[in-house]
Length: 337
Image 1 (cartoon, rainbow, N blue to C red):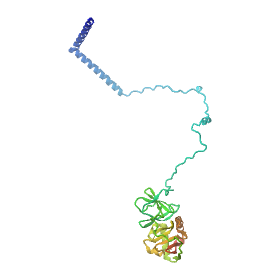
Image 2 (spheres, one colour):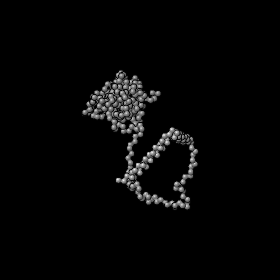
Image 3 (cartoon, helix red, strand yellow):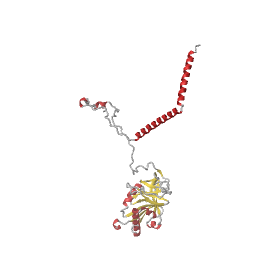
Image 4 (tube, rainbow, N blue to C red):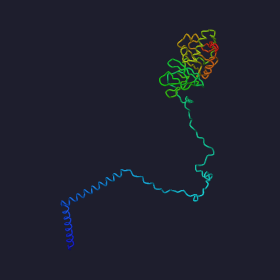
């Protein structure tokens, strides 16, 4: 096997290593190593100086470069280069029916019912009967909110209440609306009904009227009694100025027969003597006043209006099997001045 080329390569490699060894010996001398060290120090110092200079220049404000004129995009064409304007055919575009074909008649859009603030129309329709310990004993209904009154009994005490007035029960309960046969209560934001013929407000003793009963009629005229006239006039003034004060004299309770309002049972309040001096007795049922039957709660407002200037009051009273017509005098407006 020819090994001559191997010997030649080995000799060249030995010479190369000898040369590298000589170079290393040269740099290993103290004088040469010192020069190399100083040279590296000098390069490091130069690099550090350049870095500091670049940092300082970056912190200094630079002058704004002048804004070069920007090339105009879509340059305005000369008047001579403008294309002639073409008219738009509106009728042709309309015929395309881009948004569909209109119906022969517009379809009405139902708008939701809007209830204005303070409008209480229809609040009684969805209201449920109240469970509060209250009894509705009478109503003076009116289209005028300020004139309507409801006679409500609580804890055996009766008083008249108008719309917005608070009732003597726990919680925030006020009168929201007064109708001819019921009252809507606002019980802390919830509407509840207080019905005139509620089962709790009807007198348990019914009238005997399955068959017509002949009753004797008695007329009791107290118009000549000056004391009674002054007393009746005082009660009328209290009715229009302070209706709640009448609960000290008389208490009333609605009475019905065959599901219909028959009248109001009256009984003495705190002052029984005044009640009897007027000619009334306990458990009398008043069915009419001055020719106005009390079977229709809606007539209460008419009665309230005419009694303001009436010169006498005539009460139709059922007293057991007897019908009594009780008449008391009232001062005329001229006499009151």
